[in-house]
Image 1 (cartoon, rainbow, N blue to C red):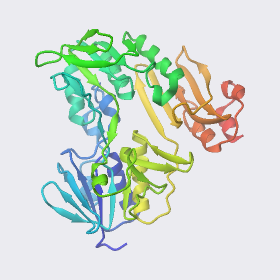
Image 2 (cartoon, rainbow, N blue to C red; image 1 turned 45 degrees about the vertical axis):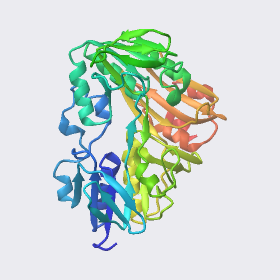
Image 3 (cartoon, rainbow, N blue to C red; image 1 turned 180 degrees about the horizontal axis):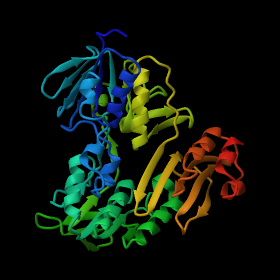
Image 4 (spheres, helix red, strand yellow; image 1 turned 120 degrees about the horizontal axis):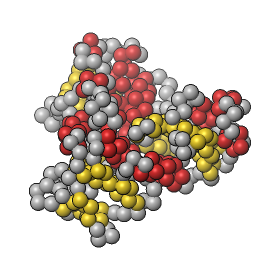
Length: 411
């Protein structure tokens, strides 16, 4: 690599910041330009629905790097500007102020945006979406004094914000059209577990129920549902998933299918352009298919891997997906992946009622995913090894707490 080369990273979130870090750690001496639409330097998103929303973490701790890191490592931060165009022939990106920056290699880490509900009253004051740091701050101000909160959607964001609202003493109702929370992520068995966790904390969890609109004069006062009912609300939190921000890639003619399509090295169909984080639909050799993962660990590890790949290093990004959550007294880690209906059985090891257990998803006798709740001694590491091993596992031994998971992983 020559010092005249410029590597451009579009998207100043966790994936983009970690890619810049990786480039410098791997010895790249050229120009690194990190461009972000937000005015805030790169930060991590999990605290926005957890510790930062609860007021347990201060603002400084959510950032990926200290303020001086970028200057110290000669990473040019271009914040508060969007990249509006990508000229692959000229190898340039165009910013919203007309500037054009050339690149030798380009990383697209443009992330995702919350899906918006297209219903009457969607623009009323008091209806919140959570994606950015200032979203979390506005929501914290809205719920810290208590009141009636309706959460639309029982995914991770919905359940974590519901837990935060209960922590502030709010009266909380969760509305979800599917039969259980987290059905796509965990299936019905463990989705039902999380429903009971919230009911045990006084949350009204209403399943199989859709939202038809928001009511109020200027400010939301109720949520209308598809059974003809209305739920009073001072605050509404909408968490119905995200959409990958693929517009730039689409306009440039890159392959897009549920995200920017990349290979196991996070390379697009243009050999000088890569993608990482929420926006990347990456081929994972461990599972033999493309997977798009919307969680923190994928942004962190994918950004690091993309930096190495941009430098021409051989990279095979085959990590099992990982995510975690903290809700009330439940701390959970999950590793693995399965398509909807892509498992045969769930094996529980430990005590569900005591909220201290492992759960394993099996397909063809093999562990394809697993999680633990409050089992920090064994944790998630042996689960990853079971997944990577790919060997048939005896479900009776898997369910037996007297058999160390590490032994099962080794065998």
